Length: 478
View 1: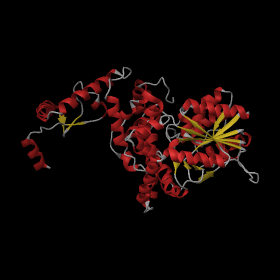
View 2: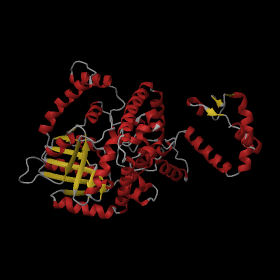
View 3: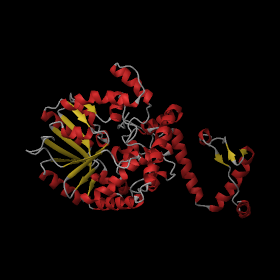
View 4: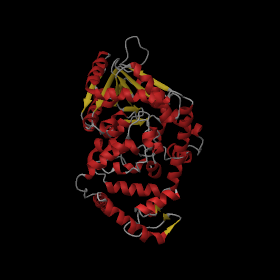
C-alpha cells in the first residue's frame, strides 16, 4: 500500500472515500489522537519554557539548513575519523542498492531493523527480501504492521489504526496462542519472540533522529530499547538518515530533546536516547565491528532550493501534525499512499516520490492546527498553498478523476470572477435569493447541482447579500 510510481490521484480519492466511510477506523483514530493530545497538553502545561524551546529549536534548524553543505562535510569527516563508512545516496534506488550490496558482502541473512521512516521511504525491506534475506521490524508497532503485510499508518504510531482486539486476533492467528486483548500480555509475547531475533541477527539497521556535525555523533531516540539492540548486537550496523537530520553542535541537542518527546508521544522525555559514534573499539564490550552511514538526498536538495519549501526540511518527524489534522483523523494514514501521511507528508511526498503525490497538498482544510502544534513552528498551511499554486499553474493532469478536474476548473473560474468585486456582489445577491428557501437556521443541508458533493458530508452556510445596506444590517445584528 505504500506509494509507488503507479499510484494516482484516483487511488487517493478512492482510498480516502473508503477511509471516511469506515466508522470503526475513525473511532480508533479519534480515540488514539485524543489520548495523545491530552498527554501532550499535560506535559506542555507543566513545562514553562516550552515556547522558548520551540523558538530555540527553530533557530537551530534554520541555521543548519542555511549551512547544510558545510555541516554535512564536517559530519562526514568526523564519522570517518571514528571508523564509520559514509555513503551519500542521490536517490532511493542508490540507497537501496548500496545497503543490499553491504548486506550481501557481509554475508547477512538475518536483519533486524529499528524504527525508520527513511527506510520506508526508499522501500528497503522489499529490496532486502528480494535478495533472499530475512528482515524483521523490531519496533512493536512496526512489527505488528509487518505481520499484517501493511505499511505504517502514522509516523510515530505505525499501528494507530488497530485496536488491542485487532492485535489480539492477529497474534492468535500468526502465533497460535490463545486470544487476549491485554496490552501487557501482547507486548510480552512480542518481546519473547523478538529477543531470539536480536541474538541471531547478522546486520542491524536504524534511522537517525539527529546527527551532530561538531562531534560526528548519531542520536537515535526511542522508547522500547530495540534501537539500541539493533545498533549494538549485530556485527554490522547501518544507519540511514536524510541530509536534513544534521545539526551544528552537541549543545543544540537538549533543545530538541525537550520538545520531541512531548510532541511525539506526550512524554517528558523518551526512554532511550542513544549516542552512536562508530564501530566497536578494541576495549569496548559491545557494539558493531563494522558501521555504515547512508546519507540520503532523494529530492531534499530540490526542496532546499525552493525558498518557501525549504522550511519543511526543519521537520523533526514528531508526527504531532497528524494527530491534530482533521483530514488525517477522518481518512487514516493509508489513504495517502505515501510513507509520510498527514500534513507534513502532503508537503514532502511530492518532492520525494514525484508527480504521483502532486495531489496531496490539496488534502488539507488549511485550518492551521498543524502550524500551531509543530514543535519547530513550520508554517505548513503556507507551504501547502505554495505547492497548490505550483501544481495549478499548469494543465490539470489527465489521471485526476473527472469530478476533481471539474472542481479545479470551477476554482479557476471563481478566481477570475473574484477579481471583479462588482460582479461578485451581484452574484452573491442572486445566490442568497435562490438559496434562501432551502436554508434552515442559516445553513443549507443539501445544495443543488453542481455543488451537491459539498453537502454530502457537511452543511453550507447560507450566502447573504453583500450590498452596503446588507452589510450595515448584519453589523447591527451582530
